[in-house]
Each structure stands twice: as structure tokens, then as C-alpha cells.
Length: 251
Image 1 (spheres, rainbow, N blue to C red):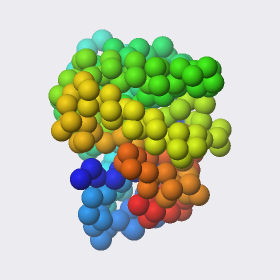
Image 2 (cartoon, rainbow, N blue to C red):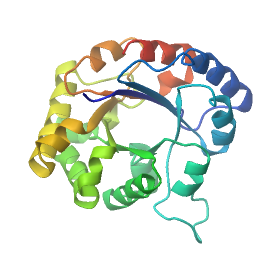
Image 3 (cartoon, helix red, strand yellow):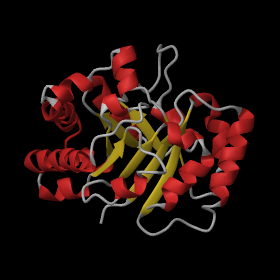
Image 4 (cartoon, one colour):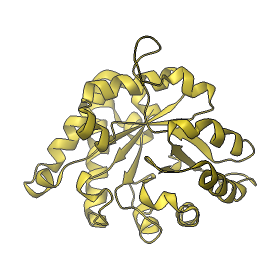
């Protein structure tokens, strides 16, 4: 059985005081142990990893980063390596988020290398895939997502079973718009079928595919109940600790 996983992505938000209230409020609710088959985490900006790691020391809430370098060390100004993140207690790292693909030109090949670097240091990569509004409207959504997933399969091969795939339709991120539940399930089902064809039935049944893109406390329960949806990557709604707690409680 695939573990249902809910991960918050704060993006470039937070402060020392806000973080403390958020972590204590959500963390205290998870001190008694994680429900069977459930994993919850939050990906915070790099400068706050140390603070949040300390605040979560007695919590079952897992710490995540919003990116990771493909390199171990060296002359890569501004980069943060997987070994550094591991030392901070990081358990998840987002790679290939559409904002980084679009704003920093990250290619599928680079994203796969980042995922591999994370895996080398026991960090679960959250590999983001998704289509633009133009690709959706022109009937090319499946083609676009398949191309992104195929690149990860080619590089990671059987290591993909240790990754999370986050389907985030780009046009839904932060807009309040989401695909219909039928469309969400259809894309997740297609991704799993593609993995079955490329990696085999066993691997396809293991890989966790989560949904992101305007997922919030009002729609999470319905989305997470879809057969091929294994949780969510929560953006804006994760900034409100109460909303995030409600989302976690819905699974």
C-alpha cells in the first residue's frame, strides 16, 4: 500500500517568528505519532532549515527543502548540496518545480540529476511535472507530462520507486483554478500507466504520485480520495498552519 503523503511548500515566505508559531502549532499535533500509512512534511526556504529542524525535533512532521544542487561540492555559488541538506535533517527536496523550470530554465535532464543527488543522500526527491494552459487547451497535456516523466525514467531508472512525483498543472498553481476531479484522476492514471509500460507493474504500483495546484482545505479530501492520488503538494494553503493541519487531518 502506498503511503499517503502531504507536503507543504512555503516558497519564498516565512520569518523567524512566524515559523516558530507554525512549527509549534502543527508539530504539537503530530507528537503523538503519525497515523499508519501517512507522511506529512513541509519544505521551507534554505535560511530557515536550521531553525525548523530544531523546532521539529520532537515532532513526526518531516523537514523538506525547496531545491537541491546536482553537485556534491565545488565552485557553484548559491547552490546547496544534498549532503548539506542531509546534515540539516532534511527528508524531502522539491526538484523541477514549474517556477524554477520557467524562471531559471531548468531542463528535464538537470532535474533528474538533482533527484539522483538527493537519493544519494537518503533524501526523497519530489519531482514536479505539469502542463501549461496552452498545452492543456490544445490537447497536448498528456504529451507534455509524459515527456517530463520519461526524462526522469531514462536517468533514474529503478530508483524512481524511491521518488515522489507531483503532478502540478502549471495553470492551476496559485490561481484557485483546478482541473476537475475526473481530469486529475485521469492524468495520475496516465502517469502510472506510462510507468507500468516503462518500469513494470511492480514499480508503477509503488511510485507515489501526489497532486499540487490550488489544493487546499476545501478540496483536499475529495482529491486525496481519488484512486491514483497519493497525497498533495500544498502551496499557498500551507502558509496558514490551521489550513495545513486541516488538510493533513483530511487524510
